[in-house]
Image (cartoon, rainbow, N blue to C red; front, top):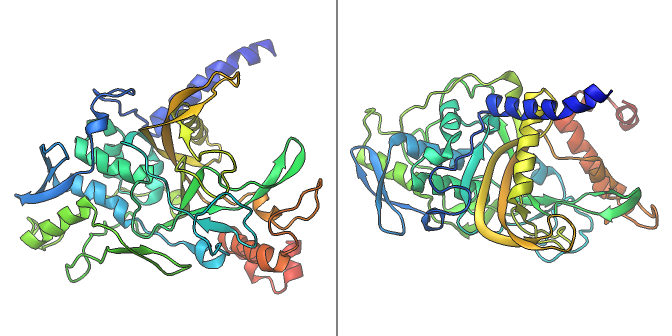
Length: 412
């Protein structure tokens, strides 16, 4: 037993090494390092001209930088993720978007916007980005974000930090209950996590890259984002620089003779990578479930979850995946050792991916008078619990939907 106990540290090191090897995890530190450098000067860039099929951009410092065709595709790929947000369509969304910390009655989720971070910078990624339907060559290039041009990295960082939302995203925080210290705690919910929605990786994702333009060569409309349940959220948003760059190239004509963006190499996806994936940003800001917290995560805990998730995945343990890690210049006060010794720490955001983030606590919203506490939707079984159960069956156990009666499905 003593030998086995002494072997645990070696197994942990081996697990992390396996994760780094299989997931192609590389910290994109570069010359700026983890603690400063030129990070604060890397602001959002804007394309200003097209030269020889390439996009020229200027950062806020006025420096010119050339984006290659590949760099334009790299950034714009995050704009065209294939969202299909079934949970928002099927479940109950609170009529009040965002708002203060509160008990959310009669709803499964609340729409909430991520809170922007100051000077976010993409530091690490893994091959879990394939689960978003991104092409393999893009994922490989993102494995070392420190080698990307500064303005390209800044654009990517804005998406992974939640400062900018991709088309089709409908950010929400989920309500759920749970037990703490052996007793029912009532409402908990996503206090520091915001779900962007569900992405569907198509069966034919490995056969053809989808260009940004439509069949007629015109860029799709991008001035409005999703809004009311199942509909479009009103409100204008500026055109992202990557998309503007592609539009300029299409207006000027491209080298492939078709007037559209060139195809991108797509490698076959593993069979288990296809299908529906939910994408979350952990540490993206306050929600109605944050209680007394600030909705932020710090770098040390985010790195820990990143490595642990990818280590378990590399060892074949079913788990959620850590796709990207962003660090920022925003800071929060934390007591790391729980001894009353607080200090400021840098905020970070983890992009994590899973088949679903439903949990046992999701089905406890309707509990009544357990350990002296009740769920926020106590006794609303037909209104709240029934649609949640139907959604879970459709999503994860579709074979049960064919059973003829509700008792039969419940027994199964």
